[in-house]
Image (cartoon, rainbow over all chains, first blue to last red; front, side):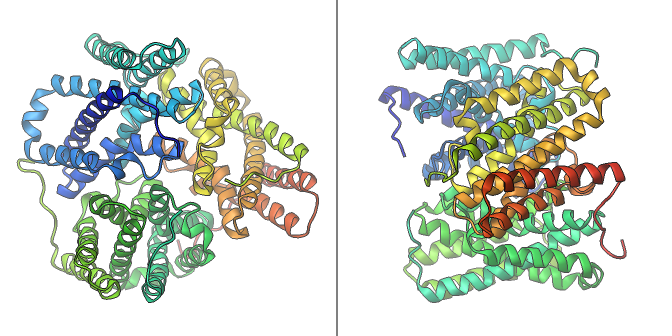
Length: 212
Length: 212
Length: 212
């Protein structure tokens, strides 16, 4: 397995943002499970799935096994903590509404950037790396929705996967131009965040097929 | 790939119990498929998914590829045999009812113990190993239910995943205390079995979130 | 990772047929997404899932990571092209109807043969190789249907997986008898194609369980 040639400050930054992303996505899974009246175990399962599935898929596909979330217990602990928080505090969380969407957008940006960076570091070409970035950022939400037998919201609502793709494009362009990786990562995550938040606030959506 | 440093009698025991678990979970998939009026191929697919998916996920995640169920044909044959039995004998099986639940609880115990043992043998820390044990024990049932577009029963019913977690905790504690692995495995599987059966017979369930 | 000991003309043939299969399955995912009124991104996601999921599962299970569809960008491009074609031309495609079914049957035959050949080349035994062939051929369609919360059609309709199994059996028998691989591959894919098309035209279906 190749070691990831990342400068140390970048990997620390990505790790911190990654854990925040895990926690926030875990909250989204846990609160959905509470809404579906699942028991405490179902809440934890949905938290884990939403928080970790995207990264697990990415790591399986690039051959980085066991996945990071099984090697570094902080991932699991962050996801479980999110599940317990959702279980006990689902009402204040739901009352927040907008703040949760904002945190989720932050997680989306981080996961897209981290997913793309890791895929490039493992030697993938730009197009597959962008695909993996979108998969990392959206995979947890897809798994969360599939487990409660709903059509994944990313498929039918708003500019979500497209925002993740923007982050990947920025990371790939930055690497191609030889720009320093930390500012590029920050710029990419910020762009995802801004596009996602603005698209929700303004009700933007992607085009449907002509004639449907 | 690390070889699994298991004493021979333990691995024989686990193999036998594993195959019984595969067969029993295969029966659960096959009878569900018959109830859904699927054809013979759908019945076999659901038997295979229910019997093998949990172990396949585990092996993918720890990097043990090809998974055991593709390297050792006895797994496939046991799952296929369960599918044919479900296809031709679904009525007497459904009349049994309780006995099937009892066999399923036995499979749950074995899969939890075997999943945890294999994860520890591949060098995972206790918390990820426990997660993998639950995934091994419950993954087949989740896949089975997803394929027929139902919310996985493990998410919303009874003490199922929690029983699997108990088995993992016993295996991890036993290894930590340096106890001999065969009695620990038997004790773990038995504890899962008893907790699961008693929880069904008494109608126990895990708590829901406050205020739902 | 073992290199695949394929004669060059076979691997060229398989590659061409593989890319046609990817494109055709991508069309099936994309047109379903349009019918479900998904936006452009949902259409592309469903095209990618339908076109690539089967091969990705196969490559994960035999340890060929990153999967071929992430290493060779032609796969991604073919799947994305199919998504855009479905998005802009869904009405003429749907009017074709039968031709799409015919192309889909061709894709099924190729994927079954290529999946089986790759599994054998990675040293799997015949029974697991046949299972992988069916998984490769049907996995994309299963993923496509799961993502829109439908019971996978392969589980409940017509002779589909069974046709894929026939292709695998022909490839395995051919290798066992030492026959030259190119004609065997062509014969296997043709047999799948004919069985599938005839079964649709004649309304054949696999048997249901007795007494349901």
